[in-house]
Image 1 (cartoon, rainbow, N blue to C red):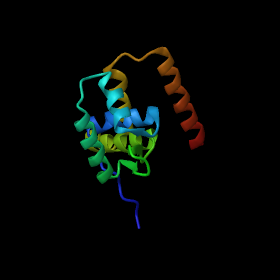
Image 2 (cartoon, rainbow, N blue to C red; image 1 turned 180 degrees about the horizontal axis):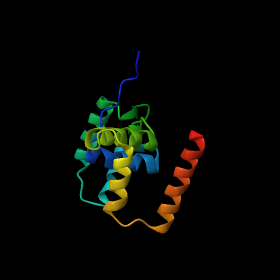
Image 3 (cartoon, rainbow, N blue to C red; image 1 turned 90 degrees about the vertical axis):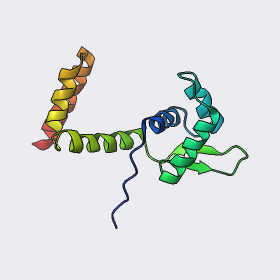
Length: 129
């Protein structure tokens, strides 16, 4: 049986996931406090989003304590890969090359970023031999 694909998180859900990836397991209050430092967010909104994200399988909820603790079900890397695969398929017809060319031509890239990209390309090329 194939593994069920996790639903794509909304922008608001991604904001919550970023908090959980950075902080680790957190209560609603923890997530609310972190998000509220960046922009005004309601506590009940964060609570409702975490409840929805639990139903969607994006987060898990530990109910053993009075204050429930939420954790991301998937790593940041796995989520990014899923989102990127979806983007490549939908916007670039499955072409990673088109995605990379568009990304590099669309904004200024630092020397450090270009060097890191070269290293990845060199490693991929070496593995292909």
